[in-house]
Length: 56
Image 1 (cartoon, helix red, strand yellow):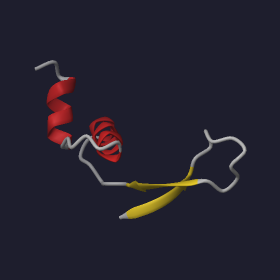
Image 2 (tube, one colour):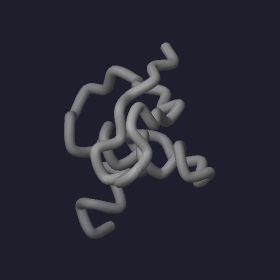
Image 3 (cartoon, rainbow, N blue to C red):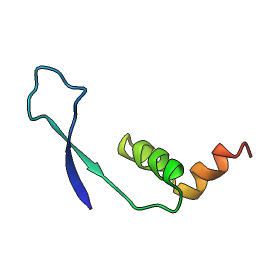
Image 4 (cartoon, rainbow, N blue to C red):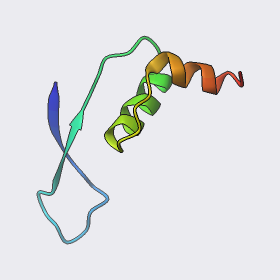
C-alpha cells in the first residue's frame, strides 16, 4: 500500500510529500527498520532485521 505522507523535516516546502510504502509487520521495531531501509533501496526482510538486531 503506497501512502503519501507529509514530511515535517522539510522547511520552506509546504505540502512536500514522500512516497513511502508501509508494510504490516509482526514486530514493530523490525518492521520499521526493514521498511525504512527498503525505502532507501536496501533490500532487507523483517526476519533479517530481527536477526541482525539480536546480534547473530
